[in-house]
Image (cartoon, rainbow, N blue to C red):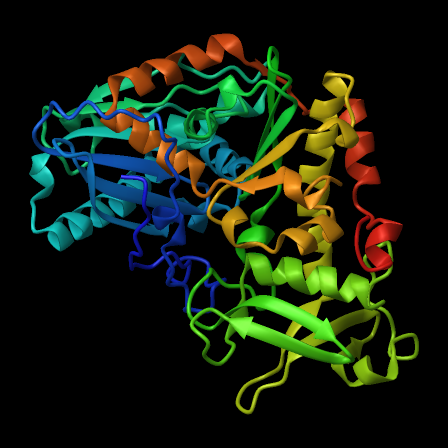
Length: 470
């Protein structure tokens, strides 16, 4: 129950936006789940259960034997909605401007989920009609679309969700390829901008039981954050964009074979490591973080995020700097066949936007409690992406708040784990249902203080340029 299991399946975006260059194939989001030791599954029902984590970019599904609380199969796929926008704002805009837009997005989402459900059942030698229970989580926009509600009101003040608490459907009503009388529970949202995926994540990491100042960060297309001092709990959501998941980057791809996941610049040489150890075909989110951090540490980026000129670079790196007009790129690796894989100036800009959103959100929550980074006791980093980043490099870039490395704990796909917990235990579901009344959402939209923090967070710190954080 507490272990993880490697699973196969496509998490790429090749059929929709092509950003992964046709090579996305990794299921770490489905596999990397960590459960608390006090979890006690019910073990009373006989049949199958499905836990569905609807991310903005990736949908992860796990199939469970309810009677034994055993994981039968798991996998993930690109969220088909990405064809209509990379983030929730663009999808809400699509729904507002396109007649029947929300219905179309729901239809496409269900197609993706149902294909994955049937695939997992086939792997387990079972039929999808044997699924008698399902738990679903997602950010507020994803949950609204899945449940058949228009997400358009979520983009307008006062950003009020169209339903409260846990939403329960029967299998036939849900549109899922499961038993028609199955019970489907959509985990409760925490507010207009913070959804049931964070409810699930906080459940999995036992966030409500933390006694000292603890920061929770779920890094993805949206950056969701929570902060507690043991009595008060605040949450917020920032739009980090898809760069940290490999999209919106020139050579970006989902984490899969051929993706550069590690970059090291030492003694004037650049070393890259790919998933699977094969020839590089692109770069995923963890590789982007490494590349930016290593470029900062070696004087290849200015504090404002500009790639330095050939003249300003050390001699060993001049052959790797490409200049086209005012735009520059840095070559991560030359290839015998195909163009060199580079980090472009626009890639750096997209990374800065993402890191500024997460950094400003963290600082905003801390300011609400009159605290600073130095007061943090523990930082819980969730998301499959967070489980594969280099901690030191994340600190150098500013993605994670300035803190001692021993304060940071990677929690895996907490949203997926919490959704599975709610599926397997009525007690865990009840804990999730009580969360909204105990948590305060901080709406960042339109707040001048957040805008100032966001702009201030765009630049890289002088400590990063010096080669690391003290």
